[in-house]
Length: 238
Image (cartoon, rainbow, N blue to C red; front, side, top):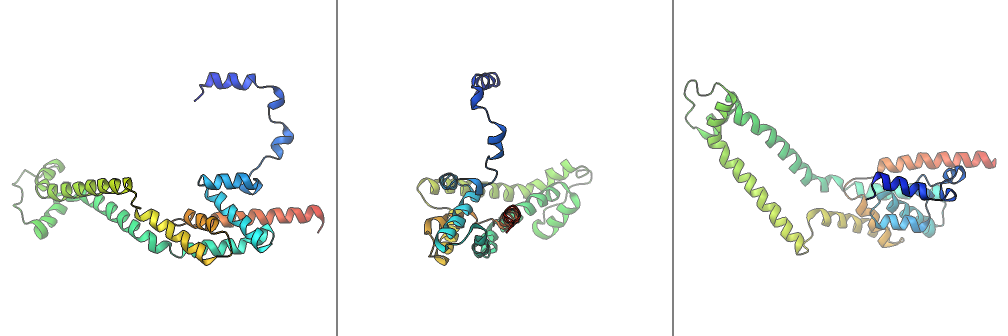
């Protein structure tokens, strides 16, 4: 990476003719719709979700013989088709997220709160209560409750470590994780539902929105398209 001084020197060394002009920046691309087909394809191959959606729009235009604004209905259908499976795919993740959050926050009072630890002890452990004066502070409570909290917490931590290690080994030998399989499944569903279009382009778009839909982006694009169409009609007097 160039240092600040070297970068400034490189900019100063450029001929003035190579600097941007007012005219050139007025015509610069602002949205993916302003890019050429080649640039859109390159960005899509690099993983840009917006570029993949733009590739689908242009594929719809080429196959169906319709103008750009008319692709909105079909792109919304595709997005909705993928989004309808989001609850199923997200469920394992949501279970893990909520389980981790609840367990993490619950472990604090279970270890350091005498009232909570005592209830847990009465119903699940039945260990001898601390002597008088040995549970006056949170740390004293923790030293008492840790006797039964350490085994489950330690075992769970070791279990997670082993699962993470196993996952890394599976990835090294080419076993696809759940996320990748789910993403490819969504791509296959979308490509199968629209066989009239190029399967690679549609499959790639389905993968891009497999876990998180782009409904908001499509709505924003539609508003921008309608605004551009209105300006075009006004300028041409049509």
